[in-house]
Length: 80
Image (cartoon, rainbow, N blue to C red):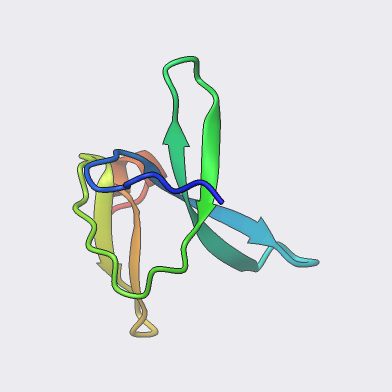
């Protein structure tokens, strides 16, 4: 086993879709290297602190009461 401290590492939370109708998903933490290769880490940490640094991110409360984090309304082409 190799261990590397993750404190201060910048990466992206990515959605990995699965299932017969692409309705099931998991989240992974993707870390890019300078040569554009990347590693996708399974997230098993139960209370990881994350700060969003993405001007294209927006929170939505949907009509069914679900709280969702997605791209901005402008990117999605919707009126909020």
